[in-house]
Length: 225
Image (cartoon, rainbow, N blue to C red; front, side, top):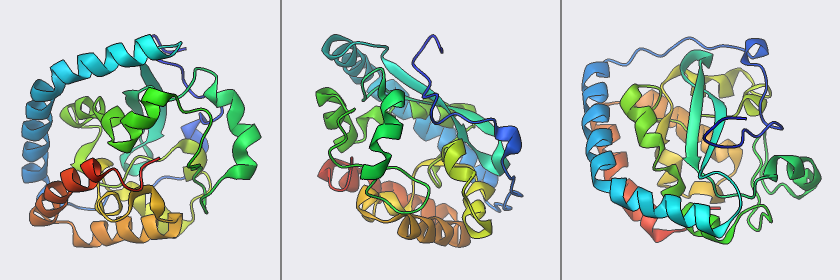
């Protein structure tokens, strides 16, 4: 078990058996990286006191670690460590098999509006995406970007077809088209279509447009669960 949080054993799979994908060339790669470093560092500094409060609330309101840490699939199939504030009960991984029949999404993802594994404070954090704040560190280190497809779980990638594999051709991000256009209210096919749209339209100004729309989508609290 990670010293920071419980790894969801039901979701972890050896990435060696998963398919890989060639990286998509990014003409503005230097500008994108510079923006990632500047924004993630600024947001970490501004949000740090608030993150301490969130960490305290998570620790005091439910049994278990403050952080949830798991393996995700990053650029070209690379394994990355994915960290967020814990929003579920400690034994959430043991209940995933029981809840599979109640999955409300198509494709390889699992989503459930009234997921009984989510803690009361966790539901609030998810509504406003506050549980994602620790991922700013992953942006700073280069494993993630401010804008890009969300990093999938190994078990999800194991079910990807060739079209879905294109999601892995760019660095995963904190926000992207589907997060400002419906969030979890969208189907997997809609998520995928929007991620591929981003990959096809990638530019510095596309990133700026998505970043400017993200706060309104997040603080609106719609489509998050």
